[in-house]
Image 1 (cartoon, helix red, strand yellow):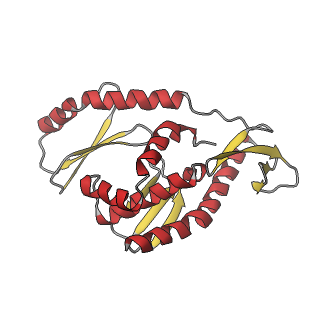
Image 2: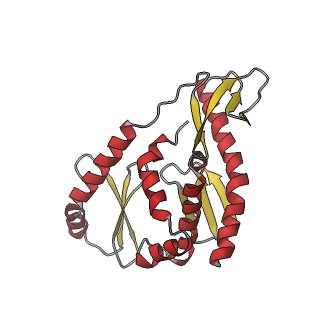
Image 3: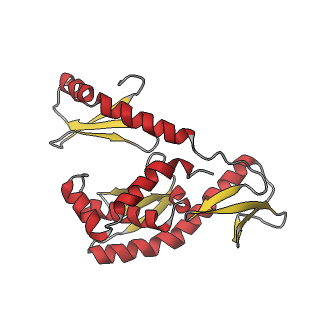
Length: 225
């Protein structure tokens, strides 16, 4: 525990210690498998101020998140732009035309599910070719691409299988942010940790990346249905 925050401590064969704060604010810590408990507590104590500072900033940003209501005219994001909900009895799913999302008259929960499916399908069409473009450019091989509900992350990659995953919510973000996330995950194929070599690799293929990181910090809480 760090104040009111619970942290999940995981031990592995790694040689260094890392603390991760996920998109939803959950905390995890990776430590070498033989690290004694008192050392774990000392590391957490040394980083307590940084963790509280980051969490306070994240909570402040979340307070300003957009609260969307399932009513005609409500705006929903797609690739960084707002489009407007319009109920239509002829619609069977979310239909995207012009400046509108046309939707059947269903419950709020069902509407959310329809939007999730819309973003997932659009993600398959939009993200797949971009992953292939960047993977070819960067000289890495990807075997599988998935658009999922990742809970705490915008994107992830797998070591065991050359696989990259993206949260369906990223389809609400601008294309530049999605491109950064793609490059970020592909760089993890070469560099597992967020060290200087990793960020140098990101900068090599997406030199504008810091603007996209800043965008996610400020507007990530708005990527909700």
